[in-house]
Image 1 (cartoon, rainbow, N blue to C red):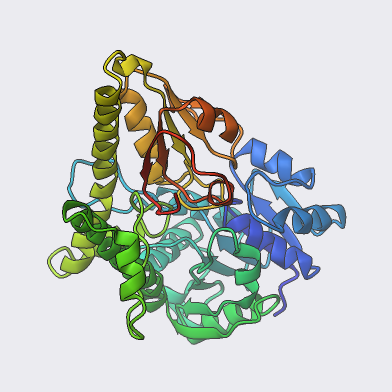
Image 2: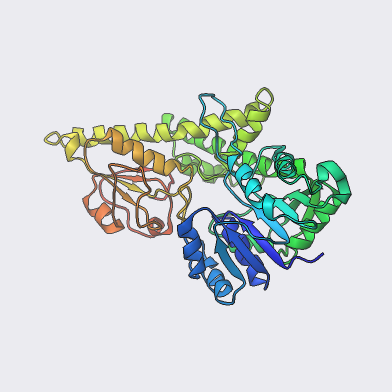
Length: 420
């Protein structure tokens, strides 16, 4: 059965590029999002996120009539769910995944499902989430059969296919990267492969739903462990008065060593989140993964302590001044370079904490956003020139290209990325 109409639920950093790629292959795509601003922006042929090349693809797809955005799902042949999977707000030392958005998306598409449809969960999810989604759909539509009930003869096919792309390179990697396809049955997997092959040039590798869920969590947990090693190394080197950037460069000359670069922490909705999905399921077994999470989550506080020391050094050098006279500039708020994504960003959290602790002016330079998010207080967003000319302490948090190419500012520098 061919897929004439495709629905993508969730038009964020993954959902919108995915919808655009299907539309660019002349498929009718209905994007669904609860955000009215996002829907209106997309229907004008514009985008509400920063992602290279995406604006041109969306503009063309909307203009040619292949892509539209709505607030409510409509009938389609395939439904891709790409909604957030945050943590639950609880007091536990081990955060638990919150599947509320997946549940709501399931409830939203259930009324328009029909026999022969395919539902794919793309949201990064804890092991078992795809089966849980299938149960929610079955409960909402008892008139249809699902894989957990009818196996290969199910009316509706269900699979998990996690996104595996790098922000800033999403358009290219959606096409070129291999995809892990985890169907609840062999037929579910085969139909998912048929769907993605509309634009995916990489290999579609078939497994089961649980292994596909675990694959994405494993990839990001591996990165988290590697980053934790680099971050821990930076703390050790600081205590031993060793330049960590030089040390890593020397160590990486070994043909079998590839240490990552340290930073102010770990952010984004993947690496900072996904390892907890494993830890929450197997807390006694996931010891290295849990330790890496704690190392990376503690790095922002270490950076804040370095800022406090820099303020103390400045006041010692300028005894006629008080802390109220000290201006601190924070360079970068996004969770990684050259994007506008602030999700789980250690840079944003550090800047906000500095603004709470410091009695003087706190400036922030973030070239990829024009307005600070709601709830961020005591920080003044400004341009690069003003920050470099007026700040006494320069806190580099993100290695945006604008910062890599500018001159090194005068004053005290706390460089968490090693570029100044």
